[in-house]
Image (tube, rainbow, N blue to C red; front, side):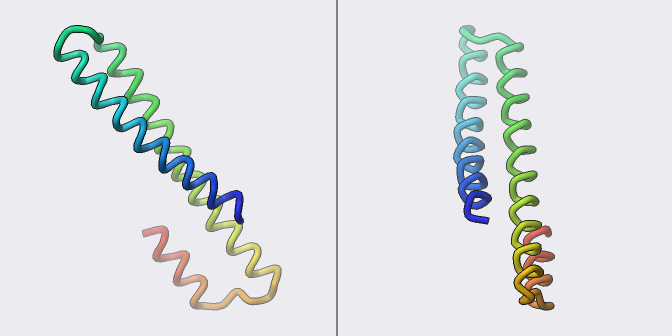
Length: 87
């Protein structure tokens, strides 16, 4: 669970960085120092990072549920919390 939190946080930072890279690449394209391919590559990387973040969040929630179930403390409130996180 702890490593899941760290992974989510790292991917959140990577997403912010990827967004900055995409914006900088678009600006570079506008002034003529970057190509359409550079923009597409930056977009692809951003979407891959976003996908990885969603997967890490899902894995974290699943690990949390499994841990609570194994400890015998999984209750309705825990399920409601996970359901809210998924929406």
